[in-house]
Image (cartoon, rainbow, N blue to C red; front, side, top):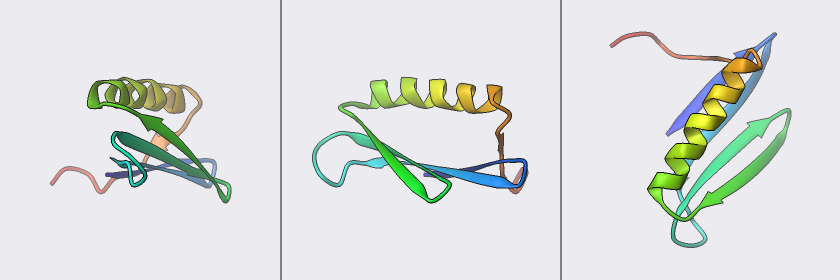
Length: 70
């Protein structure tokens, strides 16, 4: 899944996916032309990190882009 956030005309994307290199999961965070990859061994840990990450982004003023309700 890919989520896109915006703040003051800038964009940040987060991709949560299964790891390509080994077992586990990854969160790829792309901002200002740089990409950081975080690895987690299981679903429980990546879910906790995702909850923390999205809470931190919202506290920093990042809003999630979405099309609205289906």
